Amino acid sequence: MKVMAEYIWMDGHDPTQKLRSKTKILNKKILSISELPNWSFDGSSTNQAEGNFSDCLLKPVWLCKDPIRGEDNILVMCEVMNADGSIHVSNTRAHLREVAEKFAKENAWFGIEQEYTFFEGRNPLGWPEGGYPAPQGPFYCGVGADEVFGREIVEDHLDVCLEAGLEVSGINAEVMPGQWEYQIGPLGPLEVADQMWISRWLLYRISEDYGVSATLHPKPVKGDWNGAGAHINFSTKSMRQKGGMKVIEDACEKLGKKHEEHIAVYGAHNEQRLTGKHETCSISQFRYAVSDRGASIRIPMQTANDGYGYLEDRRPSANVDPYQACAILIETTCS
Ligand code: ADP
Ligand code: MN
Ligand code: MN
Ligand code: MN
Image 1 (tube, protein in one colour):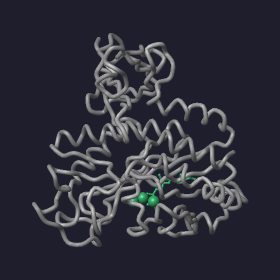
Image 2 (spheres, rainbow, N blue to C red):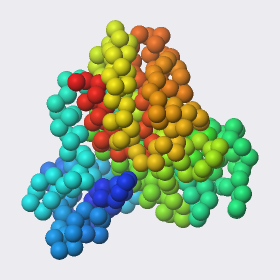
Image 3 (cartoon, rainbow, N blue to C red):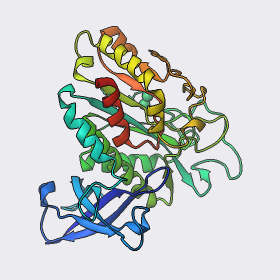
């Protein structure tokens, strides 16, 4: 019997790493990650090596069903290693692995809201050729062919994510027409980040079939249009228990002292999005507040009412690397 395993990895593209994948044919059904062999690729074609010393290694770290190929076929998330087996500089997961293990007793949970925008050619999907749709207002969570564009792709993507076993918690149409969101979580740090990368791969892959591309650019259309973010909802065990509100406020104080370090790993071109308009806080300020969508960190009303729960970091942009973002959130708030 033959099984198709799609090995997926992050390349060395600068400033935003992209996804790459290739198919390995195996001769037996795979039940666990340890059965999968390492593989190699040409790092000189992915900005991960020089041509004269070009081999990089793919180390399988997480797998799920391949909902597109079906049957026993699988999708495999990989870490990139140097030819000698050491960690490649582009491998951001390796650091999260260490952080997750070091702070395992905190039992951190993450729920990531992935916003994205469909493009057909040079225009966002559904936008009139060479022009603009009506101003923002009716599109968020809208219904009707004049309000939302691309729902058939969105539904297909949701189906394959669920079929793959990903922990999707919801979807919605966003403020700008052609823009959508899905959420993954709550899950632990490695789980949420691996699933986020696989769900992004599925989004690009499903969109191919429609001749449409999905972009994670934080400001896909300049001007008076909402950007695209990836809010990270975050909690530790002590935040979720009685008295958690105090732990959440302490965490916010710590986050304020490391604002620049966080912004540095929250996605490229984020300054175009974090303007202080369109439900964001300016990139040069840090504020936290209950129920405030214009703050850097929002504490949900429910959390304030209960006295425990979670916080929402609204700063990460749609193109954030969840490995880096989850690692720094744990390091800043739990140290
Ligand atoms: P918003 O109101 O900001 O649009 P969403 O409903 O889109 O929020 O996303 C909230 C995310 O937070 C979901 O993925 C949800 O699973 C996650 N979440 C809920 N509770 C927690 C928690 N205690 N810790 C971390 N994430 C959580
Ligand atoms: Mn949301
Ligand atoms: Mn949103
Ligand atoms: Mn949000």
